Structures are given as C-alpha cells and as structure tokens.
Image 1 (cartoon, rainbow, N blue to C red):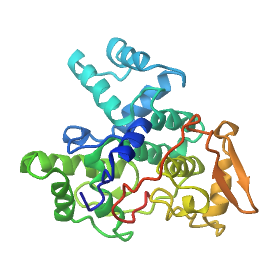
Image 2: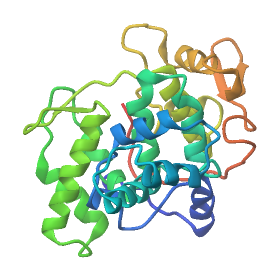
Image 3: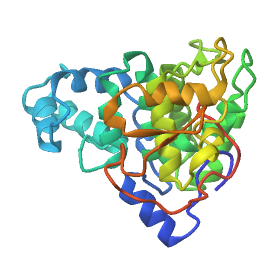
Image 4: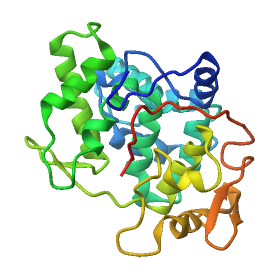
Length: 281
C-alpha cells in the first residue's frame, strides 16, 4: 500500500491497532456511503454517552431516529454507521470520540473524519492526494483514483472505484477540507481543542509519546493560524477541555496525554502505519 494508505507492518501491530478499533483490508464503507456526518450527529444527539451498541441499533432501526423511509434502509444505515464509527463503548476509537463529541461541537466534522479514517481503509487511501494539496488548489481526480487503485488492485471495477472516489470527495467536503460541488478546492481547516485532543490520543495509540505527539501524522500541521502560540500551547488548551481526559502538564509549555486517560488504561506498542508524512488539517 502507498499514497496515504496505512500499511500493516506486523501481525502484532495490526492486532494492537485492531484492538483500538482500527480496521484494515482492501474494502471499506466508501463503496456505498460517505462518512455520514449528518446521520452520526443526529443519532448521537438522541442517545446518552453510556448507550450500548444495541441501544444504537434500536434507535436507528426500531425507532427510526434518522427518519429513513424503509426498514431496509434503516438496517443498512445502522450497519454502515457501525462500520465507520463502531457505535460501541467497548471500541476505544469510538469511546474517546463520544467523550469529546458533547463538549466540542465545532470540532465534530474533524472528529468524525479522524474516527472514520481509523475504520475505513478506502478513505485512508485518499489521505495523501487531499492533504498534499496546497490551500486553494483543485483536487485532481486522476490522483484520487490512482491512490485508490493502488490499495484495492483489481478487486474493484472502474465503476465501483469511481463511486468510491465520489463518496470520499464528499467525505472530505463534510470535514471542511474540500469546497465545491463539481470542482473540489482545498480549504484550510482550523482544529479545535477537542479535535486536537483526539488527534493526540490517536498518536498515543500508534506508540508516540511526549513531544513526538506534536508532530505525529495526526497532529502535525495543527498549529493555530491566528494565535501565534504554536502547537504546544494548543495542546495544553486541549488538555484543559475536560477533566475526564486525564491529561498531565509537562514542563512549561508541553502537554502529554496520560497513558491511563482517554483510552481507559490501554497501552500500545509503537506502530508505523503511515507510509508518508500526512496530516489531518
């Protein structure tokens, strides 16, 4: 895999990341759906943080909380949202997302994107062609399709691959990275404290600690444009977002997520699953 797709470096690393909720392989939800940010927002607004996977299923399928027209569409929506986000407190990437969601409304588009990136290999394959674009530059569709083809090989035909590209472009628009209906133009995305907190936690999942977290694949480039204080100060602002995140202050201007914090005590081995230097902003 290349051009933004994460590689499975070893069986142990893959097992550790899978335990956190990451998903691997040549297939993904973007063959038929986007990141479904509107549906995610609606269903999370109807249930408490403590809701179980069964609670989400009942809300979507039995009570039709998302207003779908048929039972089949309700069931499919429940399945796709489960693939993208887990909707299960036992899955760390969703559990942490859910904790931050209620306290950082402005950061929800980035939170949804980052969680979906851990869960959908097809969306991950489009990271490099999108994030390597300078702000104001148009997305080249051929690069998008080429990155996807590198990952899936011959498993998907051209028609399906084209649909994946359309869905992925829509997902990047929902997160704020792209703007435009026909011509997709790269936009600057300003991270919120909650989004940065999630990015820092994902860095710890991949084995990073201390100052390295500020230049991880998730957090590099999240320096606030207007504050002038840089990533360390932004990290400390994220640390103060919610006492439940259990962060600790390090030195005068650095913050590091406590190992027993957001992820509930899980420990992780170092992983090298990004083939190129990419960021989420």
